[in-house]
Length: 102
Picture 1 (cartoon, rainbow, N blue to C red):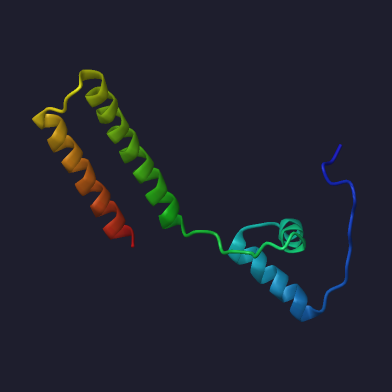
Picture 2: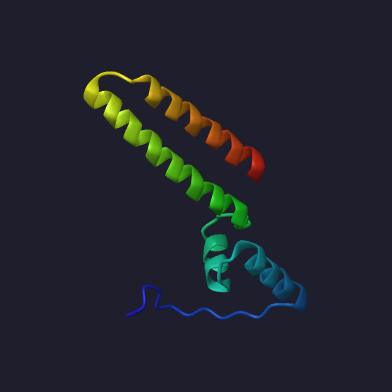
């Protein structure tokens, strides 16, 4: 059974239909999702560029590396010079990724 069993139909002017199509294109949402969000009082935002999605993936991988180093430092109670250099290299990588994306 559907989560939303009530069907709603309406008539739109050509301009309204074009605006709905535009919202669908920039947001990546279906027309139904757009109407439901507008009814809920939410604003329709454009979907992020693909470069932001890639940036998010890269930063996530970098964050995982930092978490591994942090766990090791917490387990041993210290951070050695190679680990400090690795953290520094990771932070440089973050800077490079963000700088090249923006």
